[in-house]
Image (tube, rainbow over all chains, first blue to last red; front, top):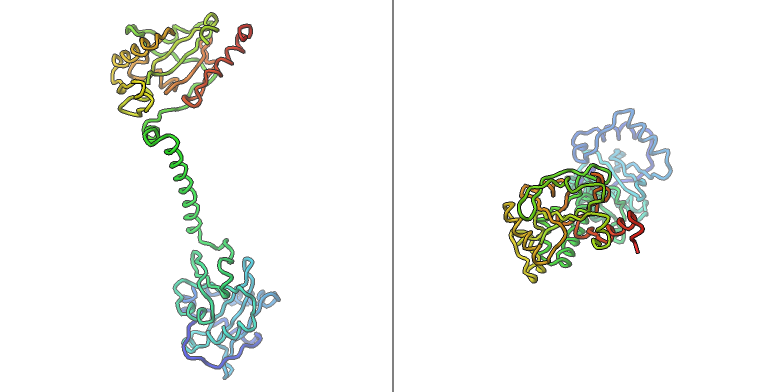
Length: 248
Length: 120
């Protein structure tokens, strides 16, 4: 994607086969690739991509042509994740001449879908200016891109599936943290702060490793007068009920 | 329960480490009832509290004290309170962790099933 300043006369016309070699070179330009943060396709991949784009009637695309017949780039729109998205690519040699803004404005007269979204690399400030000049505004961010939208009523309509993983994790962490905090507050209110703190610091309950059917472990104990005695000495054919506890 | 089943089962209390000593998790209710002891650091100190308990409540169920190494508590996970039944050296009933799962009525139901003739 590109930026621009003064306007220039442009025409949007149907894509022709002879445009493709020119567009292929546009998308290979290292500076353009860096700005768009979009990897170039090799020749085979490029033609396969455009064959696919052209074969699907849902896609709409135009070649941007200058008054002197120069192919300046392309602008196209396509469905993605349930919404419609617009994109464009301008020959780097023509950046700074107002071509992108003029081409996009003209294209938006043809592409009337609203909301209409556009994704761009975070660092691509020039392209953001082009979009904002044409009425797009910031909608949200993904892991790599900024998403802008045309039509104020469309805020938030972009599929959340493209929301950043980081943002999702923060939301989940926020919800879990909020619930934990609410549960903690509820516990303190119900139990009283002193009891709640005591439970946090001194709760020593545990399930224990022995279960019904296991041999009862023997252990050394003392009677109230200090005499040593083995617990097992109290076990016999009769059931022995053991009551564990303390004064406090 | 002991009155009902005392002829068929033996009852033994194992006095273990304090649940709510004043230097750990003190409870308002213990302060109101003047049950205020620090956590014992010796078997003798624990014995002293166990005696206070036994005398204050005229406790007549045989009571054995877990020495300060807390081995009985460690083996049976008795803290803060718990119920077991041992028969022929085997654990035949294990109650839940007190206080919320300390359920004497559940033990009584177990005994009633074990000794059906005494359940009325």
